[in-house]
Amino acid sequence: MAGNNVDEKQNHTSNKHISLPISRVKLIMKSSPDVSSINQDALFLTAKATELFVQHLATYAFKKGKGKEKNSLTYSDLANAAEESETFQFLADILPRKILARDYLKSLEEKGEDSE
Image: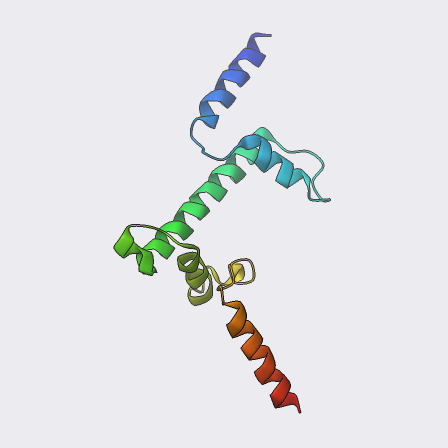
């Protein structure tokens, strides 16, 4: 019984070192059909690694972005980072650059004219 109490204290202490909700990370991990059980250490490390990755992406996007004049990070900064950086290229489909509807419709019209 004393061992359980120690484990609970360690979990509570280690949870203070991460910002992401552990329950949400666990839910996402369990959504994979290949995952049947999740070790607490693996859960913590996955959450911490995810947090550090998001921090790295945000820092990179902020430094390279146009929002730094306003001391802010915008969606466009993140989308540009995903498109321009080889490290974040795999996010390009998840963080596409925003375009206006009229620009999209115009590009569709141009493609239609090219195919004729």
